[in-house]
Length: 66
Image (cartoon, rainbow, N blue to C red; front, side, top):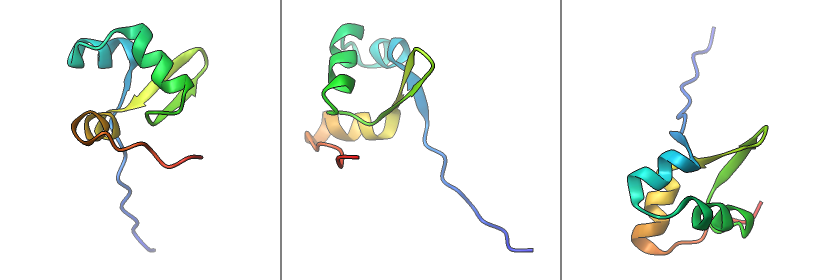
């Protein structure tokens, strides 16, 4: 059997991302809606890729369009 290792990104809610960064929940939500940061929607919640958010905040690098 072949063993495959996957790198699972750390996903955080907008509330958690807001708490960690000091950026408002509403602004982070707008960033998601404008595809400025990497996220997935799970039901009604937005889950932000923490590593990509940190990269964006440090470098201003926009994510690849999906």
